[in-house]
Image (cartoon, rainbow, N blue to C red; front, side, top):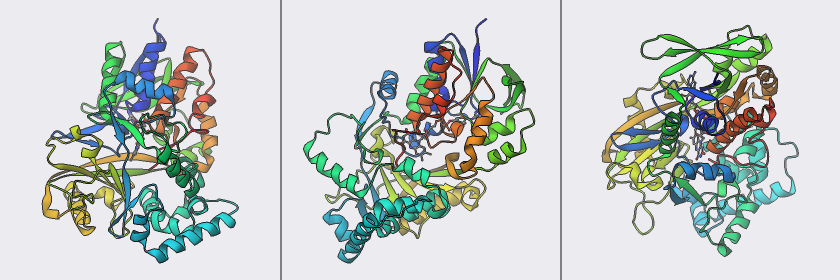
Length: 486
Ligand SMILES: Cc1cc2nc3c(=O)[nH]c(=O)nc-3n(C[C@H](O)[C@H](O)[C@H](O)COP(=O)(O)OP(=O)(O)OC[C@H]3O[C@@H](n4cnc5c(N)ncnc54)[C@H](O)[C@@H]3O)c2cc1C
């Protein structure tokens, strides 16, 4: 009889697992997806023909395998020259921060010298034990530069001070990047061609080019979903996994609930791949969990995310020649507003806007489910977005033609809460023999799409090779790799 694999979640990890199972094994994948969207956080939401990407997804990877995988699915992706800047003091600064005349002009000579001296001091007298993210950033950028360009944005993302965040997150996000490296990169760039998108030796934060599907990241994942259906897999949409039924050391079946009819169904499977948040997965196990494990799982923290899409006649900010700004996204470092980042979707792809003469932007707010921001109504959020962009001189509030709001729960698995005890939880979960933990929230790891996919590819490979080893899956994205650099 044909074996089946139950796959929780139709995001990049779950869909990759299904696709790879169909290509490499005889196992039938059944994907369970609770939302109406294919693609998870990498979906594209279509609002009246205007497409919203939940965060601006660059397609790049140091893994040739992933680069090829994507291009096998869509060989028509756009090649973009990355442009993103920091907006601070109503002025633009390069990102990564560069020592240019413009930077000196924006900061003023006194502040620039102060930043330089503080950086030199840090090189000579680094903090010996980096016990938190603040130490990590100060050691790499100096205290002054950290205070100017990193502190406010990072605290907006995580909602807590940087000295309460593990240094591990810095190691993931801006691993290897320092001023020295940034300067070396600039010099090297003067002598090398930008034609190919060979990215292996470039720190993530500095990657100059990336691929982007014409209609946003969701386009790739919708194509993958079609292929899965054509190849004999099954995707069950708008059903939420509520229970994993355990027999000794295996998951033998799962219960799913139809979101519309509330009908409960049981599906048996030989394997399970989970990309759902670990905290929820542990709650869904139908057997008593040791207290210690339950406490670690309950203590895992997530950050949530809101995007407010605004359709505009135009932005007030311009390139020096008066044309529309070229940035894909802008870090808003202004402490007097809550917005953390601004996406200019037209610049990711002109196909993202229904009317190419209009400007289609996304304001990003980082929050926690249930907090003040998360609880705001759609109208309140739109009013806030308009007010804030006008306040920092990016738009005229009466220039907004239309607007929408998207809330994305659990966008970021946090490296605080009980994360420092994660290994104990992981070892416990590994004791269930036939379940693989893949993806971002599935592994509670700050994975980009590529690592989410690689974890799925590895898990399928292990099954195909009759290897029970799970460490090789957990180890994806822990070393010699790079991460989302925003
Ligand atoms: C702001 C932001 C910017 C980003 N930028 C980039 C970038 O530039 N490049 C890049 O490569 N990556 C980027 N990422 C990361 C990328 O979004 C993720 O790595 C990727 O989407 C993770 O894939 P996944 O399949 O593991 O999880 P998800 O995308 O989270 O998908 C999981 C799926 O599981 C479903 N699910 C959850 N619980 C259940 C349940 N109980 N039952 C059924 N279904 C369930 C969810 O609805 C979801 O569809 C970014 C992320 C964020 C938040």
